[in-house]
Image (cartoon, rainbow, N blue to C red; front, side, top):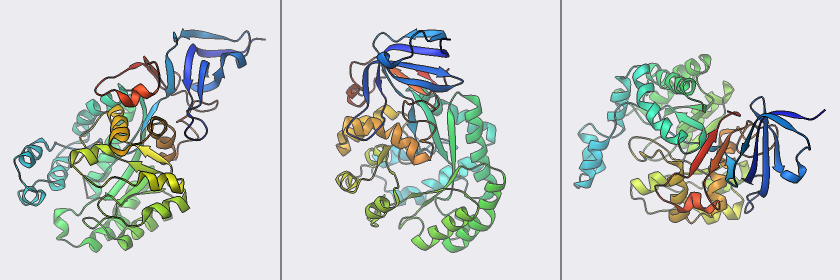
Amino acid sequence: MAERFDRIWHNARLATVRGDLPELGVIERGVIAARDGRIAFAGARSDFPSGADAAERIDCAGRWITPGLVDCHTHLVFGGNRAHEFELRLQGASYEEIARAGGGIVSTVAATRASSEAELVASALPRLDALIGEGVTTVEIKSGYGLNTETEMRQLSAARAVGRNRPVSIRTTFLGAHALPPEADGDKDRYIDLVCRAMLPAVAQAGLADAVDAFMEGIAFSGDQTARVFGAAKALGLPIKLHADQLSNLGGVAAMARAGTVAVLLPGAFYFIRETTKPPVELFRAHGVNMALATDCNPGSSPLTSLLLAMNMGATLFRMTVAECLAGVTREGARALGVLGETGTLEAGKWCDLAIWDIDRPAELAYRIGFNALHRRVWRGQ
């Protein structure tokens, strides 16, 4: 009896992103077949079961298919925006001057605390739609603009809600240790106590977070304070991730290599705040550290909702190769989120998350600026 699938995409060129760099796993005459939302076959036409049929057959007319894109680091849910501060900076105001006037992260915290969950969802959806429109099928969303239990949970609940409103996979991350709220009066240790003893248990009990993040930096929290947050997270069974080495070199590369941690590079923030110290891409390569690329969509340092532009920036600003850029927004983004077993490459058993492109070669995805070559996006076979 002939094998039957729900949907077959044929006459396609595949960049499976399986295996190791610099290869992209190119299959020139490729076929993908889906059943029950998952990839049942991804390979060469010559290896496809003869006589196989499907409820729908789609001729891709030679188009390229990549895994659906993964934006593995965003702060997509927040209240208000910081366009006025952007104007002030262009006029010469310093970060300290803006902060003293009530700007900076404090302004986003105030706007987020003043927003209902419905308002947070409504403001986040256009940002999410921009990502979806470029072939993104998985998005991580962090909290971190509430800095109290109620608002952090509302942010995470809103992040879950945007996932119910759109055909996309959402991963949520609790980032209570993002900054110090105004009411903490500069007492970082007392605030970290609140994060560990009140916020984290409440978030975990409500099932609102898939992971826990912290900002370890001179302007944020120390290594000891971060370790306390991570200890509490581990005790609750939550995976951890870390904002680090953004403004200073804390020796993270060797540690990441030992631990097998993915380095998530954020070229939008590098560009927007006019940073001059580039991430140590050559060191990552030398140590075998896998590199992901993400938008870091946030109101203060990277108001970016284009993962394609992040790819171009990764190539242009950080000198990443095309293969590194494409792997960075697919396989390595999925690896960074701990979901590589489910998505991020084109192989049987994974979710059928696809991006189908009107391009002649994968390099176009990183080469072009301000142009969206997406022909069709597929999420879980649909």
